[in-house]
Image: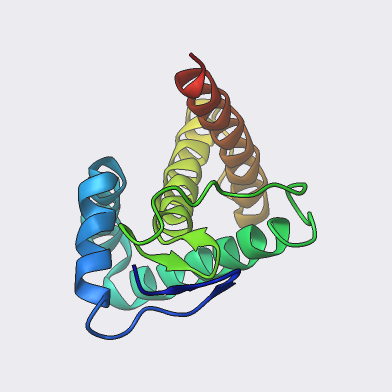
Length: 155
């Protein structure tokens, strides 16, 4: 299993990358299904350029937050991935590749739900309100998903 050396972690070689990406897809098909749905919806709404920018920004921010939390505990508190799938799926450092991808469609869905809630309440569209409600929805989604995931892992 290359990519691991003692306690240190080396990036995958170019030869390993396709296999690890395929492994990520096989182990987490639901992530890639939601990602595909997000991409179709976002491109239809925003176009390719804005979707790519949003995906890069949201995924990059998610990666930095996950990487930082697994090392110093900021912003989510200190935790670690089990890495039981290392060598079978792609990791970015010590963060599974799927994790930052998940954040992009979670935030997109949260923003869409925020717009719907504000429209149902008859509120006029103001970007700061939209962003604040979307952030609140994303926090609730994240909390619920984390609780569900923990319960599913219990014996």
